[in-house]
Image 1 (cartoon, rainbow, N blue to C red):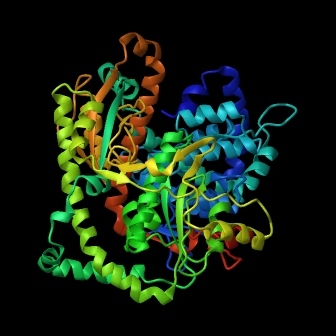
Image 2: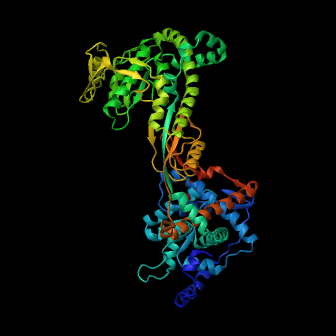
Image 3: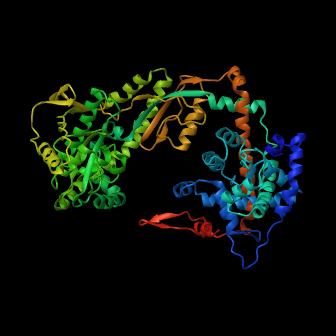
Length: 637
């Protein structure tokens, strides 16, 4: 039965005497009537459930009880009006089920609940995560309002108990006080004590039905052990991403392809791509484009040099006649803007300081003469010039076939190289050696001149001054000294810098995941299917095993090797068994109730009619608040 019956039954003689002494007052004053109300055609209803009316006062009462001290923002965030109405609909459906099973609520049960200081409100159970969130916030709200202590609120949340403990006692005598009760009921629900008692009878009937569904759920010892092992057993994997971009850059040979013949063979595909690109790459007045090469947090000097070399290689392609937008698509690490040809719009107010200053300094058609360094990495920045539309269109027609061939070849090549790395690791080679062997045939590349890292403009509120500093740097001669500072305190000879497969920041590299459990995420970039595949492999195999087939990711293929697996012991389980079993039982009971309620609502969906105007949360349109029907009803109660 209900938890408060177990905890505060009438077995205590003194407690029973007190109740007997006050029960007459309850009966005389409340004249309870818990019978269902049938809606007439003229009634205003928030919802109708099997012909019965949930009137606005019932709805407003539930809404107020759910969150005694709520803000409009909090109500919107929790969608509290929808929650209140769904809870009332669920309450009515559960009440019908209870009556069907012969379950009822006696007058003295309602009296005992109220005298003991408990009130109820239905929280929809169909979504356990949402229900827990609402319960947590509700109990926190009652604690903040001083109606319940934090520890009592936490205990009720742990029990998933919707019987809210409220103090109806006199502050001096510490005994139940009718005036305190009436005052609290009015403040909480804005209902008369008679109306409130009728609502609580319905709530209690629904609560009994919830207990009928939840209470039989148990967890066996073997189930608890398996659940504990799944949660606290962990695995760590090594993973190697072979990126399509890297494979296209170094491991495909588009030069051996007759691009003219390829274009004719794929004319429809090419024409469609060209049409899309011409629209996206067409220069727009004032628009800024950029290419970003990211730097990892705390990047080393070598990592900075490699990133700068990659950006310098991108600049070299642009100088050789490829459109800036197309190079951005295949090089930039800012994936959002890369898909748009590096376009970040014509507003620079939201940019970080160095980027904003450099972008504002550019004239139409100009590109920064060097790399702009921000906390994100190195940027090459350009400002569109609509006067160059015809030139860019001609460049696009020349370069697009090669890029399409590279992209198509990159996918197949990345998959082939990933499979080769996996096979080499299964044959006993280390991950680093397998990568080196796979990359060796493609170790082409050449010397290139590094872009200079432009000096950061001094921080100033004078935008013109900032533009002037950046402009001077951007339009500096591209020749300059042969020795350039790439990082603080490090000077590299630009003439000796190479950009090749083995130094490309996108090259395959061994990475190690954090420890993850069966329900965890091994590493970023995996689809749900890929995550399930990696997790299943990690907890079924032995250390050192390599996943049979590389996993597809949005930008390549991943080779996975099990590095370590830690299992839990029975000793650990026995120490934490009681608390874990309680948690597991709660979760299973939540799931059982959620499933039951979902089926109940599905069967009754044709008989539930809701007036949606009552559940629209207040919002702001153009600065003007918009009130919903419930807000107005609350004011009129």
